[in-house]
Image (cartoon, rainbow, N blue to C red; front, side, top):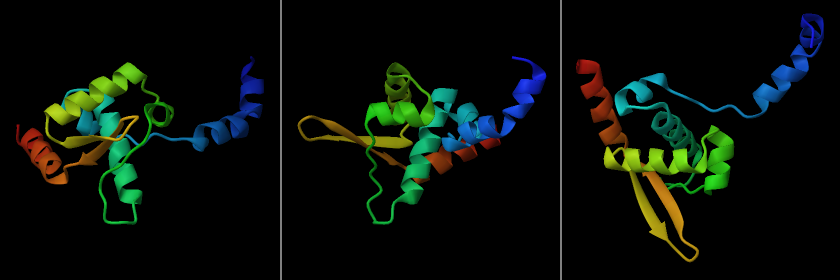
Length: 119
């Protein structure tokens, strides 16, 4: 594809890229030790902010999380384990088939970020 053709498709390209954006906070990657946990946490924060009812627990199937974040199933599972191990996310497993609900612990996250910033 020539540069001229690429420039002619710029609007179409931007429309495709604007369709689904993953929100990402780089400071989370540095504070939590990786891009995958930071990307998942950023997505969970976004999902939590969109909730209108008082329930902070969020659920999204792995396939949809993968679509939203670009992470593979294994990357998502490992990122979730890492976030739970650092206590910034808690999980609740319920139902048959089992669903994993996640909740961001904002106070713990704030503590982790301030600890990181003080180093």
